[in-house]
Structures are given as C-alpha cells and as structure tokens.
Image (cartoon, rainbow, N blue to C red; front, top):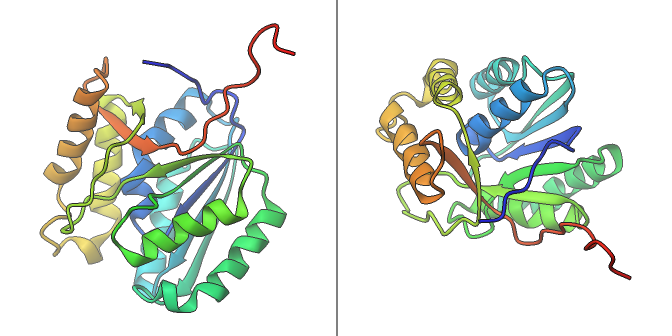
Length: 221
C-alpha cells in the first residue's frame, strides 16, 4: 500500500452540496490534519444550499470543525436543494469565482458516481474548475446504497471520530429525525474503512482520487 502525506497542504478547499456533507464525508480527516498542523492551514469551507435554519447549522458546525485552522472562510449559498442540475449555470458561476480566488493544495468534494443529483453535479464542476489540483472525493452513506470502491484512505484516531460524530449530532438538530442520521451509521462506516486499509487506529475515512501526481522520479529527465 502506497502511503502519501498531506503535510505539504497549506490551503484546503472543502465543498459540500448540503449543510452536513463536508462533516460526514471528510470531517475526521480534516480534524486530524488541523490538529497535527495546528494554526498552519487555511480552510475555505463552501456549502451550496441551505435555508435559514440549515444555514445557521452549517455556520455553527464549521466553527466547531475549524477551530484549529490558521485562517478560515465559510460561505453558505442558498441554491435550492435537489434542483442543482436545473440551475447548474448559476452554480458553475460560483465555481468560476472560487477558481479565481483560491489556489488550494487539496480539495475535498463529492464523488462523481454519487446518486444524489446535487452531489454529482458538484463533483463534475469541481473537476471543470480545478484541473491541476489534488481532488479527494468523499462518500456519503444514504438509502441508495451507492458506496463505491475508494482508493485513498486516511486513518483517523478514535478521538477524531468521536469529535466528528458528536459535532454532527449536536450541530444539526434538523436532521435528527432522519433514521440514518445516527451515531452508529457514522461509526460503522469509519470502522469498515478502517478495516479495509488495516488502519492502526481501527478507523479511517475513504476517498476516491481519479488523478494523482507523485512528482518526478529521482534522476528522471
């Protein structure tokens, strides 16, 4: 198994269609990275939909997750949930703005094969806007059963997992009535991905990397 490091990353861009997507998809990995490089990393956190209640949740959750960041910017747009493919031109304009404003070292976004139409569109637009960047596509468990076969794993500590899950349950009261939005859902996926990569901590978050450049080989011409 090839091991690479994100320790070079100074600027991180996190993209989520809905208020809790970033936390579910890459929350523990982000917490580990920020804790290891405390006050060194700049994080741009962008959520593309949210009514007033969901916007408040998104802002409160981002504040909790980004407490160890050097700098942070949090943006919550109000595009209508489930209708992203029909307003794609407007959303693409926001991506064009992000492309001009941010030069991220790593981007966390949705999986291209995600069966939720909003998730899938954001993934496609991420690749359109950021062609020369490390893009890690995260996964969201859901009814459709569309979890795939990730090829990148980030071992995470039990403490980071616990902080992620407690923050999710506390920060998003509007989601608590959903039968899948439970601690055991989040723990189970973290444990399963930890098993798959033989994580020394027993837990991991998993991602898809479609293109990965590891740099020139020593002596290459």
